Amino acid sequence: MVSLKSALSSQEKPALLIGNGINIHGGNGTSNWDGLLDKLARRQGLEFTSSEREEMSNTEFFDILDLAKPYEDRETLQSEFCDLMKTWQPTRHHERIANWALRNKRPIVTVNFDENFSRSINADFYRSSKGFTDFYPWSSYFSDRRILRPREEFAIWHAHGMMRYRRSIRLGLTHYMGAVQRARAWVYSVENSLRARKKLGAIDWQGSDTWLDILFFSPVLIFGFSFGKDENFMRWLFLERAKLQKIASIQSGETWFVEKKSQNSLNRKAFFERLGMRFITVESYAEIYEDPAWML
Image (cartoon, rainbow, N blue to C red; front, side, top):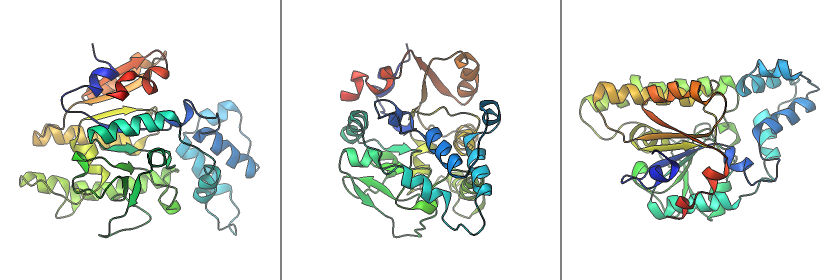
């Protein structure tokens, strides 16, 4: 039977791709993005009915809030969003999961902006000196030491940006489209793009020192976020991963997606399985964040 424990105990242990669910479970009830977006909406004097809100993804909602800001107000919503996250604190689940990754020398890629994972184990911050930009700090990470091989060593990576570089925060649909545009050039266009280098049988490519290398080439365990239809960037990346495996016959290891069982789980299962993922459902969030397997 496929389970969270079997994924964590597999011979080639997975990298972890983690969403905001870990902040909500065991947190203080305020550590969620929906709540922060609602606060920003109230600041803008915007009110939507639940039906109106359901018509917008979170990314579209952020862009609507951004459009509502007065033109002369130069403080970005990204900065306001980060300010609202300052009170967030690591939970014992952050520490438990980060320590599992540290012990097993496996990377964590999080779509969260906060630094709860790194703070939970007092990890240090490392910034690449090669082509660094605070808009896309994709080669920057937290770890116990400087690393050389992202897919083979422990580090904590922030795929959607990090609080210390507020311009890096990917919240709106416009932000996500920009990230896709940047990553797509690395996969297809440039001379040392992913596809060009793999056709030559090379190991390195433009994103070799970033979290993208982990998502394309490591076994991955995904949990803590819905991976819904508004997750445009991540869905595109895993579609590209599946295409790469098919075209280049590259084996990246298994991928698992874990979610709490819902009425829609059976319908969602088809999408993930067509991407080659093992779809795991659990009865409660505690079965994800409090599984004894994290102590292995």
